[in-house]
Length: 387
Ligand SMILES: [Zn+2]
Ligand SMILES: [Zn+2]
Image 1: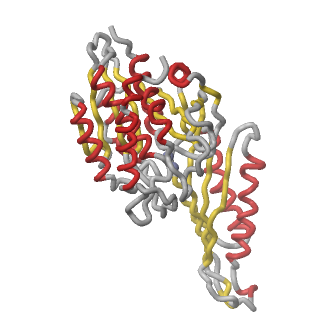
Image 2: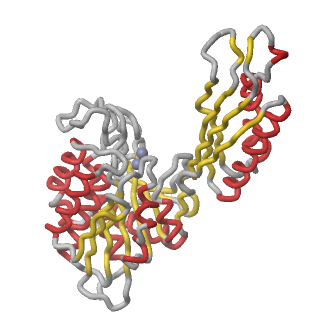
């Protein structure tokens, strides 16, 4: 079955929702307008239940099929939040909010799951229950985790969960997926070095944190190059360096190094966290200083379950004609929290030749709306075929 006719008919209407959301972007958990709009639409479509306030501003809609003989429940997830950046698209529906922009296409994801919800509520051509999930704070706020902690999976009895992200640079409407690790775990580190400050002309009376931080930055490079199995993918980037001195003639008392670690396996994630602490402590001790390392775990590795990846790819082929193998990416995605709780899959859909994600000129491609909506609807109809 290609694109569903009813969804093709709804293309203009769904595009209207998408542009409305685009014009009113909201950051992290402050998706009040968007959440209200989503809840209003879901009620209007005749969803059997609409629940707000899950994971603070998350919204859930329940759509029961014509029958429910096997107790099957499938979740479809969209993200609603925008990014704190200034839009430079010049579109007539560009962001009205300074320093807020839908630069990751979550406006499109929300509109597509809404479109699928409208179709599913109208047709109900499945045996079981579809749960549409709209989460806040995907961009660095772990909104998916907040919804899971609020009992999302158990409360609605979700058995499998699916999500989609658009990808610029991949041909318009081309699906891609891979089984296993697709996106990386994204962690943060913050290292505080402490020495003894003093006069720059009397280094022998100080413990110089600038020498400590220089050696540490180089030593940290050996974790990925010398400790990590070269077959496994990992990145460790130092991104911010500062010292407590702003003067040219003062040796600083303290220094701070921050950065990020990206990994595609939990074993490697544990190893890098451990080595980061050991290398920092060893380097500081060698030079007579002390160190305090904070390692903050962000989103986990996005791991697509094998069977569900197969179902997602079959639905993609049926809707779009083909589904190619996606490469592993070092970016992170907080849908991974949902995939830690239930088997499921994250698929990507080509946004065509647009500016990249998180770029001030990026825009979601409205042409892919019917195909994305059809895939979500198809997942429900295929995994829970009508009795
Ligand atoms: Zn993003
Ligand atoms: Zn995104």
